[in-house]
Length: 151
Image (cartoon, rainbow, N blue to C red; front, side):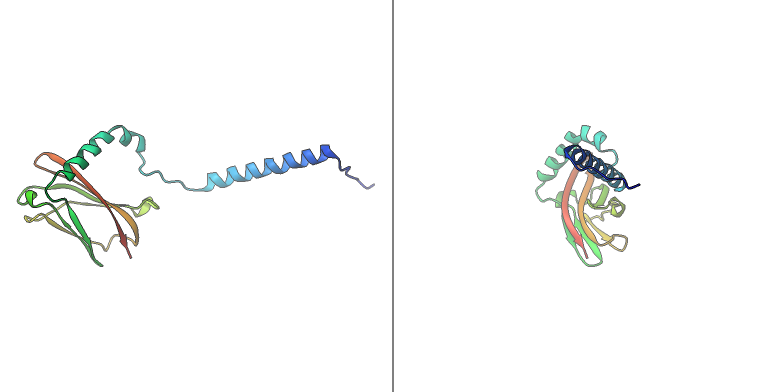
């Protein structure tokens, strides 16, 4: 006995809905298998204190000379402003990779008396990074951000 499929508009609609449903299921399975990194795990908590970040950036821009950094092959040279010489500078330098959170790395600020810090780049993997310098001097917090590429 041979089963013969009758092709009419009802069969076409049923086939169309079935293919559509299979595509939706395939898309959902595919999207669950993708790893999606947020900018930071505690994104929403950081958003609530964002005004503090804006204040730090304004303070940094008000300095006579802002922080400068020079990227070399083996090291990153950071120079803090002249007005911060002979002061205790604390904070951290973060290499933030927007593409891969596993590449993010932070270093503590350990500036010398001239306000200069050298960071060896042997732990930093190749890629494009946002360099985030977050520091404190004389009880005031500052922030500077820039883009660097490590080859």
